Length: 380
Image (cartoon, rainbow, N blue to C red; front, side, top):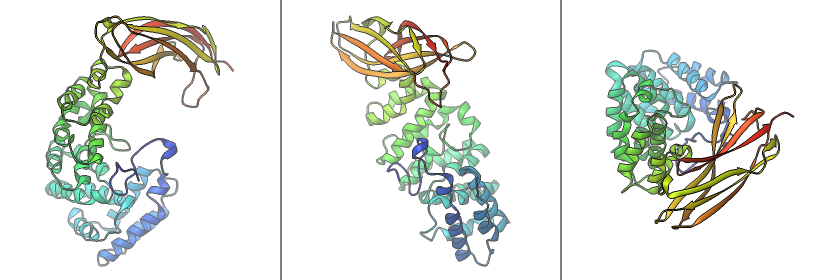
């Protein structure tokens, strides 16, 4: 389990490192959930639907598994939140109610906690979240009443449990992986900034990482608001948090984000020669070779993020730029730096190449320089 995750939770990551849906919401875990429910509430139900749902998971994906078990739980315990909540609270008294079996339980709480039970339902979600996370179920509350949910999430920022503080940030992310989208969060991403303002200096790394991921989400929707927020934090936030929160903008070469993380040097401070292409014709499986020279013509040192951009050809003939990291370098006044790069065009499953004219540019502190043209032969 990653150190940046609450108990039992595995954050979305690279596909090759991720457990399968079957390993997370497993048959055994749901069978165990049925045993727990029957032990704490034998008078309520035989929990036959929950037990049967374990055998129905089959080829279902993770979210579908959670919904299938949620529906079974509500089938076994009809009557809404008033009947469900006492059973869930009783189950919370057991230490073995933990891990991925908790996700369907949180979804059942969210599905029933409407109207007069809204605030109590959010409280129960917060109580469940240290056992795994309530971030996915929180989306139902956000869609139902965004303002009311955010007001309660703001109070969670002072909770002594780091998992609940993390829920305040993670559950309200505009682009939370695996989760239901909340249209108003995408339309007004700055509405969650007050929550982040209370958490960016949190003593828990788990919480701070969530804050950075959340602000990075905002940067994809409103770059200027994200940079302005990070700028306010820069004096007393951990530098790693600022870098992580600006990572998408840094990759795109946003000058304001780059300056925020320490890259200094305006376009006028630089004299750039190139990029000069040494392989004007490239075949798929071969290499593009280019070179360039960068000089600091100012009177002050400059700190540079030097990247390059390959303008790939799309099927419709339009360019599709993709940024690649090259080097970070500090140049003193009058100092120069030579760049030589070999870029491989290897067949990969995630990209389709098209034959025709391509180009390469340098991107330095977010500014584009030069353009070297070459032709790619993508036939095999």
